[in-house]
Image (cartoon, rainbow, N blue to C red; front, top):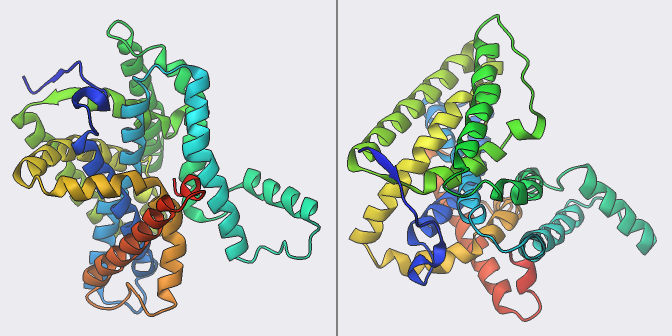
Length: 358
């Protein structure tokens, strides 16, 4: 068989962290950084060598699967755990909300949001209003989406057993049809369909699919098929973006949307393929695990701080806009990722500051 369901989903099944998941999480965070270091290259074709623009867009598309994979990894770990509603929300508050609020406030002051003239109470009020209205920095939208998903986790956990999981598959099928598929039909055909499920048509589909796909045992043939589908989706997306960039820029934004059909297919196939590839990497180079086990616990902190680090290092000459673009995009990502990891690792070692390091 190409795939079958396994019964083991817990990270504690071997007494230590799941190595393949740590490797995927670390890679995903690095790719998030690469998305942002490639952004200056792809913003416009004007005055830029086509090969640089194309390589920048290609790396950007490859890296865009990172955020869906982070949602999927969260679903894989959080849905099957029955730790009680109170314990679940307490842990999410400590591990996610606290560092998120700290770094949101940090970004507001870094951007000189103008609270210096306020009375302390007034400044706190304005800060809280700012955080309610939207993210303090562009990459923090991910945390807002994740917090909304957390509110629904206790409900979806009621369906995590062998007899009720068909309901989860039903939900993801409904999510796929009413979201990615109908958006695609509405954009590329004159026929528009209304099937708005609100928040349920957004990133929670990735979250649930992470749990469902993460417990599938994939055969070698299944892994090959996933890899082929990924490469086809990747090639089609790059070709489509190149075409639309010169004919209809609106199409570029559509194909880059993480909830568009092409990105959903790309991300899901990437998740399956990389999971199996991670096993092979770990088996072939076991020494990699020692590094991954150091980096993975810092992944959320790296996500929170990397945009500040990226803005900071650019002031000191680090740039991704030089030629060849693909090289400087990756070098910039390595620098930002490394500095961010070092900062978060340091904070985790300082008494009293571990709680802000994610």
